[in-house]
Amino acid sequence: MVSPASHGHSHVHVHDHGHVHHHHAHGPSSPHPAQAAPWSILRMAALSRLAAAFVVIAALWAVVWVAMR
Image 1 (cartoon, rainbow, N blue to C red):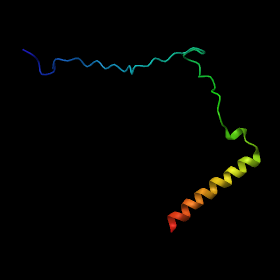
Image 2 (image 1 turned 135 degrees about the vertical axis):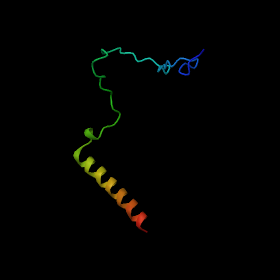
Image 3 (image 1 turned 45 degrees about the vertical axis):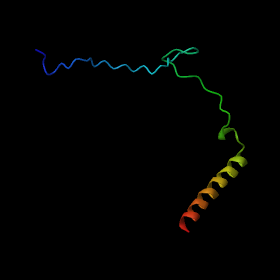
């Protein structure tokens, strides 16, 4: 007789999603090496950062102004 707890299939779960993580330039316990960033706000001149901040502030105020109409 089959017990109610056994229902004919196993409960093995495989979490392999078809990709393998390779650690070529560093060991598995060390952090990943830095990637070259195509753009960084830290590389901008101070005046450019200030101008970009004012552009963002103006855009946010425009959103507020349009929402209040």
